[in-house]
Length: 125
Image (cartoon, rainbow, N blue to C red; front, side):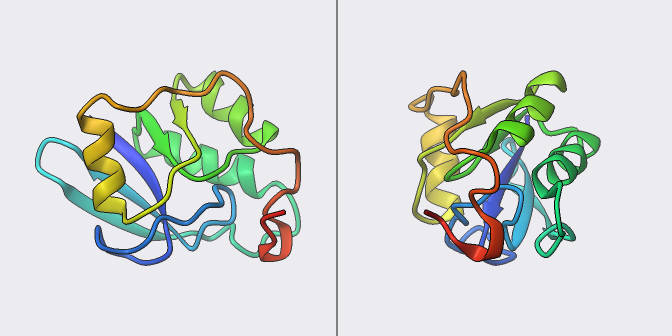
C-alpha cells in the first residue's frame, strides 16, 4: 500500500511535519518494503491553494492514505474525493508514525482537523 506522510526532511527518520499543504516534504512510502520517494513540496510557499495542490500531487502518486498532523477543509475535500483516507493529530518520526499505521492503531478522520489557511506563513495556530 502506498501512503503519503508529511515530513520535515527526506528520510524515514525525519520528524513528521504537522502541516499538510505546506509541509516541507511529502514522503510517498510503500508500506510493504518501506521504499520511499521523497518530494520537496512545491506548494510550501504557494500564495493560495497549497492544500489542494499537495492533495492532487499525493493522488497522482497513487497514495491511498495520508498521515499528517493537520488537514484543512480544502485539502480534506480533495483527498476524500480521490478516495484517500486522512489520519491526523500525529507526531514523532515518520518511521514511528508508519509503524503505528501498519499496526492498525490509527483511525481516519471524517472532517478537517483545522480551519482554512491554518498553515499559512508557517503558523500552526
